[in-house]
Every structure is written in C-alpha cells, then in structure tokens.
Length: 481
Image (cartoon, one colour):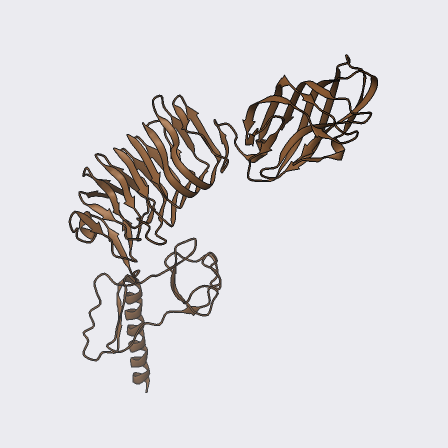
C-alpha cells in the first residue's frame, strides 16, 4: 500500500514537471486525429488540427468599434473575438490598441470592379479606342500611360490619391472620346500632345459627364464636350498649365462648381457656344494672364438660365468676352453685377414739346423728345417711357425732376404731375404745384416706390386743375433704380 502511494506521488511529480517545462519553453498541438503525429509547426506556440472540427473563439456582443466593452479595458492589442448580436455587424474583430477592426476575408471583392495598375488592365483597344465595360468601376492605382483613347461608356473611373493616380495620354488625339459620358473622380488627367476630352453626346438620352476632385494639367487642350442631354458637371477641379481650355457646345446643363483656373493656363479657359438650358458657375476662381481670356460667351446663342455666383475673376487678361443677356445673373468678384435687382434706366428731354390740354382735370402724358441713357434691363421704346425688360418682379424707386411753364396767359394755375404705370396714374405719386403766370418756370419733383413686372412701363403725366391752358416741360429727367 505504501509502495503504491509513493508511485502515485512520483508519477504526479513527473507530470507536473512536464507541464511546467511545456509552459516555459514548449509548443502545444491539439488534435483529435488519431493518425496525426505530434509535431507542432516550428513557428506556432499553439496548433489545432482536426479533419472535421473547427475553432470556436469567444463570442461577445460588441457595442461599438471604439469601445472595449463588454471586455474589460485595457484590452491587449491583437485580442480576437467574434461579435454576435451586438450593435455592430456580426463577424470577427481584433483589437488594435484603440478600436475593434473587422477581419474581411480576402476572397470578398466588389462585383463589376477592376483595379487598374497598367494599361493592360483596361479592356483591349479596338481601332485605337478602349471601350469600358458598361456598369463597371475602374480604380486607378498609380500612373497609367495610354496610347489609346477611352470611351467612358457611362462607366466610373476613380482614384484614391489625386496627385499620384494619373491617366496620361501620349497620343495626339484625345484621352476621352465617343458619345457617352461617365464619372471621373480623384485622378489627374494629362494629354500632353492632345486633348483631354472630345465627347459628342449626339443627343443620346440622359448621358452625363461628371468630373469631380480632379487635376487637369499640362495638356495641349482640355478639349470639347458637346451635345450632352444630361448633366455636364465639373466640381472641385484644378486646371494647371494647359495650353488651351475647354469648349462647351449645345449642352443641356453645364455646372462648373469650385473650379480653379490657375494663371499657368493660356488662351481661353472656358468657351460656350450654341444653345444651353442651364449654365451655372459657382465658386472657384479664374486667374487670367495677359493675352488670355477667362470666359468667352460670344458664341452662346440661347440660354434659359445662366448664373455666375461667388466666383473670383482676376488677372491682366480679358476676364469675359461677350455680353450677358437678361437670362444671366452675375455676382462675382472682378465682374460687374448683372441681375434684375440692379436693373436701372434713365431718360431726359432733349427737345421740349407742348402738351396740349383739352379737358380740365384729365391727365395726359407729357410731350417732348427724350433720350435714354444708362439702361440696364430697361428699354425706352418711345419718348417719356421706360420699360422694364427683366425676368423677375422688381421693386423700384422712380424719381423725376422737371421744370415746366404754361402758355396762353392768365395766372395762378394749378397743375398735378404724376407717375403713370402702364398708362394708369399712381395716386401716391401725385404732386400739385401752382404756376404764377406764363413766364413762371417751376421746379417739380415726383417720386414713388413701385413694383414692376416684366414689360411694365412708366411715364410722367400732367393734368391742368384750373383750365385748358397748355403746358410745356422745359426739362425732365426720369430715373428708375
């Protein structure tokens, strides 16, 4: 009995010694494979082997990727758990000292996605044109040299680093060609000997070109975009060292938002030709050097709505070539403000005329030949008439100063001078004066705040409140501001 107890103690001591040695220096391999050889991988501290069983780590309910809970902080970097039923997506996560990072299997990739590290990653060119596969996103990684053109085919090309992810076209044609638009984002576009764009939508329904967060630089020409029925949208674009700019022709909607044209560009930056529904230039800047033009609208024949807002035009070159029609609203540093709110008009008498009074207390338009000056969104189709030609209802101050005298003898005659809108006297504008005799020349001032709708017109009228004596306006100056 004593011998057996001693043997048990000896065996237990040996087991504890083996375990201690294993903990201090050994490797551990667990297996339920009876045919397996106990031989742990030389680089592993722990190895699991089973032909039909998996490894089940701790399952916890993580509440946030930024919180250690439900584990107790601090958590050692590298801690691995499987989050199940928490407030974040189920799956494997490891702690990187500051937050939980999901483990994404390498086999999970996007559909309809191509990573482009060289020109060979694009579809094969046919006739010198690479036609992108419809519905596919192409991500540019690094500098891609191209001798063939690209038909965007309504696809998306993106980069992650605008400075280093580049498409460089080495030919003399254009980098982007064809009738379809697409999306370009976070890439640099260069066509040293050619154009960046030569896209003609040709009326294809709803095709659009969207270019965002890109550099377009060191190109012979930025090129031409025309015939697009959808949107042409350039946002947060830097143009640098381009020999010639871009021409937009017969596009439905053109938006240039946050676009910067550096002084290193030459010739004409933006040219608009033909018919447009909308042109919007918002923010950004145009720094125009001597001999160059920032904006050319001389060829723009029709537009429904145009606006230039919060944009800076500077430089020693021609900032704008052409004139803005009433369909434009311009409010930009370096340009004259042009919008309905600042519409103005002025006219004055150059040849006085007799206003024949037929009936007492019946107002008539003052006669005489007038000349108009400083008209902006006003016209003067007839003497003593200013017609508002803007598009929006405008609140105006109408001011008229004149001198007048009556004829036919007599004395102490009363006359009332008024502003007439569309041939109707405005009662609030009436000013009544007394002329002592027919040699008396009295100064009269008439003013009123009124609202004018498109094509409304104003005139100055007079009535004799005493008799039928005629009156002559010797001077008259009418202003609308």
